[in-house]
Length: 102
Image (tube, rainbow, N blue to C red; front, side, top):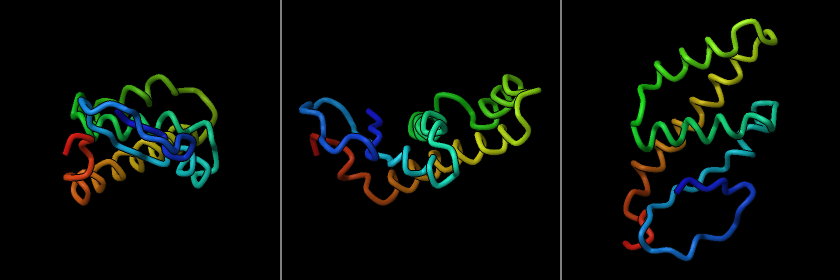
């Protein structure tokens, strides 16, 4: 489970899941647009699961955002990468405490 720790301060009462807490809303605000929190979470999810290559997802997002407001892809890319970097650092540094069972 990936939890937006900017908005949720309690842990789930389950012991059968891994938990990744990421301050997605705070990161989005740092980037200048609170609405980017979902892209921050997406970056964390992709980094944590490896479900799709980062470049593939970002290329698809660029296609969807083509013709939109200038700079929106740059902000979305930054948000995605910040989420991915956070999840990668979290996994490397705190891997033993991520599991609620361990």
